[in-house]
Length: 182
Image (cartoon, helix red, strand yellow):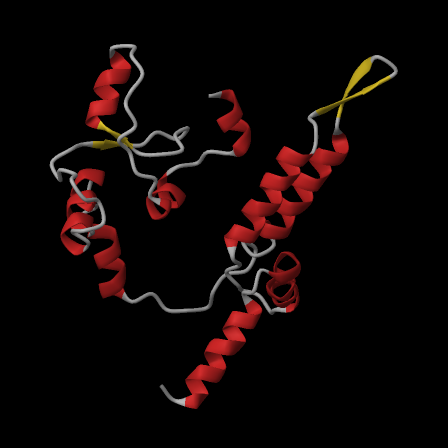
């Protein structure tokens, strides 16, 4: 690898370093010209900490009040993110790429799981590839057909699931608050 590319890689590592709550990345994002696609994970982390770290209501003199400070923090975070949506990219759409994206045949989770098993056969040892996978918006993990069948019978399922972070981050929208309720 050329030294020039190693320098670029090192610079990118410094920008994306999690030190001081992603200070470098936040600073560059704040001062960068728009249009810009920000790293969404920073905003999700902020919203998670705001929601989990602050009460929805405050009790003052035996009166329950709405915590408007928390709501203002949430609004400020969302407004900061929305500022990137106000500016459009100046580009010409490529008709071939646009057509490909619009006509792309999406694969089901079953198909994706089978492809994953073909690409990484040793990852899930002693597992079968012919099983259905179900993900709902409030799940923190993938459920197999066996678990779904067992949960329908009102019995506790034996844990035979794998947490797959890539799928979880793409398909499951579970906040820590929702986890507490389950």
